[in-house]
Image 1 (cartoon, rainbow, N blue to C red):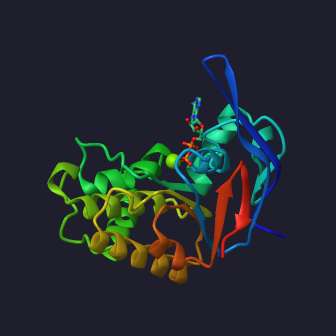
Image 2: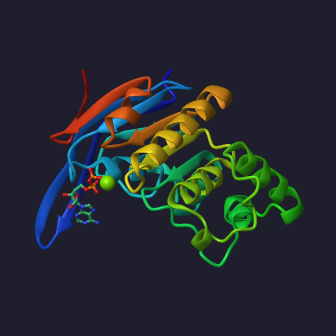
Length: 225
Ligand SMILES: Nc1ncnc2c1ncn2[C@@H]1O[C@H](COP(=O)(O)OP(=O)(O)O)[C@@H](O)[C@H]1O
Ligand SMILES: [Mg+2]
């Protein structure tokens, strides 16, 4: 049984009186431990799909299952809990909190889940060491480079040991060398902890490091050559 199973997914947006049909009877199946890239032109709905998978957005039809969770049937409260427990998000812009240090940012999901600081800090520190930021633990985001900030964001996304990592153009704002380093990091974490990951990207080098690449076009996914 696939870990992520999407069938007949439809998603509309209503913008200024016009109905925009973004995802059209979309199907997607991702196995546990698979790392899948989603490519496609700007505006085709990659972010929308990731948001739906992560319980950040509602749907207008179809089935979306992640693990044992049928996303559309969750109450708002259950959806928030699902997201916190099971999903790690990495965005193009890291959305770190500027007033908090690297380790405090990376601990944040655990603190939101009511873990004590004593429990949360060592887990966040271990991840930051893992991504090569062991000597930047107390730096605020403003005193880190773009690549370092994104590595803090990856640590934050993984600190809850999510079952699914969703990354939305994670290297879109980085120079090529830094982007490559982040790819290597994602790939090795995928290998080490068997993470299931779905990564929207414009970057063919990142896509090439995934197990499989899908193309989103016309509201549907197809295998990319
Ligand atoms: N909240 C919204 N309201 C109306 N239209 C939206 C909204 N969010 C996204 N869209 C539109 O839906 C389409 C898909 O957007 P998005 O998923 O962000 O694409 P991508 O991530 O592939 O660039 C775009 O045409 C965008 O303008
Ligand atoms: Mg997008």
